[in-house]
Length: 340
Image (tube, rainbow, N blue to C red; front, side):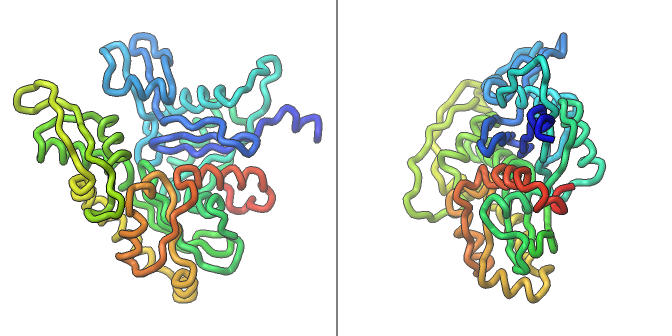
């Protein structure tokens, strides 16, 4: 068995709508945006990840940028396969004479259908995987945060990603109840684009909206240590001329309010559906918050005010899911029934 393990490469993939992370040998070796750039005439891949993102919204007619995942699921099968293949190359597999057999554990949203699950597996197999297993995002997030998921104790996880927000109650190594809504980071960007268009008559792209979210994004209109106002550049919708305006965090909090309210409603619904004994546990343990959307200023405080429960923000929210997927891969036998 030892000689064959030399030819097997085990990797964990957090295949996200916004970012894809790959863990190999307990380290995050790839952390790239989930985007590819193609040449239209030949279908040839020009760039993947950060390089492709730099081209996004700036291409001419012979180049197109594709985000293969939408709402946490594969929207473009071929582009997803290309992206996984190229990102696996980034892990540093230099042995081309005997390429190792790939064993993968891939993270998926808990609310996806069997057809969508099959698309993830097939994309990974086409990209060279010999064995593919799947783990649900909330479970991976819980493991990544450091929760003992095997205990007979209820824990609630909220994972706000790029395409989906996953809310799950976990006990005894399983998901007792979960709510998966397709409102997350991408919707925050769309809200910001809409707000800029309506309030400031300025047209901005996805990348600029993402930057605004990072620099001055907030979940509440009143926060401690507010960020400085941000100068935003876009196209004036009346004159068509490039223009600069200044935005502050309170404006962005107002723009994001509707989407965050939907996430809050889903959290309250998940709490309603939780069995009484587990509700008692959650009252003591509180709620755990992970995912890129959790990094929005005061997101934890807003959920805390709504639920009247303590909310704990994961140490590194963006990588919690990837870390958990890596731990599940390493302890494959222990978590084997959590992995499909």
